[in-house]
Length: 625
Image 1 (tube, rainbow, N blue to C red):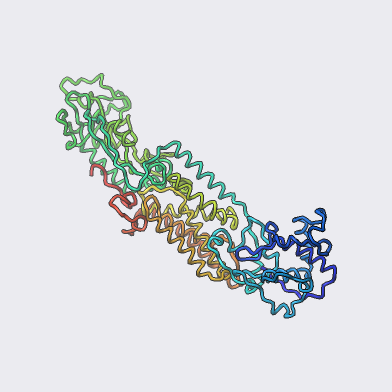
Image 2: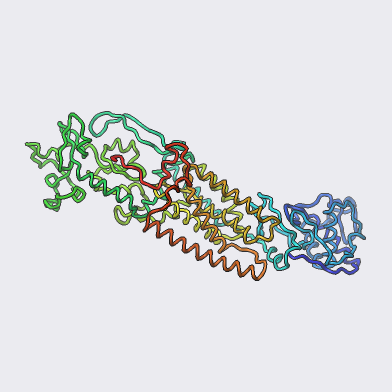
């Protein structure tokens, strides 16, 4: 802000009238607010409205008609017109300084008295870091405008600034720049977040509220035609929203849906090997049969037949294309799935084809987050909230990961390629409470930063942080589904820190201001140790937000050397951000491994055995293991 000192000559009577009229308009807008002397015509000093100056003559308010009293707009116009005159400006400023130092009365002679000490010895009145020695137009700021180093968090943390006359003129000139960008991006992303959650709640059921899995059980008729008690662990959600499986189906971050996951594919190969050792468990009355291992065919009313598949074989297939014996040799996983099986033309006099004429009572069902395939009845599959495949007989014939991931499916079966999940979770939320927290952050901090930096800068930081956080989380906890804009929001928090760092010299105690922000970030990281909160996404988002903010955020150059240094930092941060993005994608898609054995403790502290059961880097054991 420019600090103007002028040599004042003896004012004329005309100048006196002009100055008094200017001060009458300007004083109505003078208020000491936070850390600066702001000229706002909305906040008028009531005690100065008792006196009104008309044509340079002081008069009591009661003796002047309403038509003679200038309004707020005309008084401000008079103020700015008179302020162009150096004599008027100097007199007005010295009058304002005297009033704010506590002097009750101020005579005309004192109003137009000169500063005998001269400009060089004039000292501003320091008010929480601001100075009344700066010019009024340095501090005039309309509501909604944002200046460098100010904003919502600055007001919330009560920041203090250095005395303006201690800063070089070029710095004060940069500080005069006012930012008034409209929060288009913030409004858009808030609208999208709300719409997506409404759609989610309308199409998915609400999960039980809690932190640990809930055991759900019931008694039903199973595939062996016996009533038995069946139970499973249902995931809970303390955010008041859908369960994990529903969120995955809608687009949550889940690594097996984004890449051909090596660990997941190895588990599928293991399941196929076990399936080749299975046979058909047939009830003696042929009213039910199901594919199972010999150890699982324990009913006293059933017998196990090896080397066959229930309801599937060349003899029972009507399609001529499948009447080739070589198609039905080898591993079950290579057998075709006959589209029109029939038992009408089968001669089962000697019981050779019991497995083809029996009623198949169990078929593949994809259950759990990891899409494990089990052979059970449709009733049991629906109870366990699985995906039932009524037209298939073997697990090797279905793609459970396709059923679990949903959305657009995959270009090829068992070949996940939903790379867009790196960005999609940024718009999704785990529940109502989760969304409300995000909206509060976006309506305050994100909106304030967008007014300062503009929509494209904030959009760039927001999405770069969101994608970076998702990718880091996908590497370290690949089998924990996650949704939310937390990675992106931590990137915005990092931009607040960058704003303090690049404008270091305008703060009275920059170390304290930086410490306040760091304490806030540390506190939020500690909150992230709870389940259903992804601290790795926070760390990744914060890192990329920090780097990209150095690249795109406006800042003050305190000297030529400072400008060059910041330019070097901008280039270095930009290059580093690109390199880190490339490394993350390489590790995520190719290496698919992490050497951090205890990283799960950064994401969630297991207060109980099941408290952090989903915050893991490994696949859960299969039911048959």
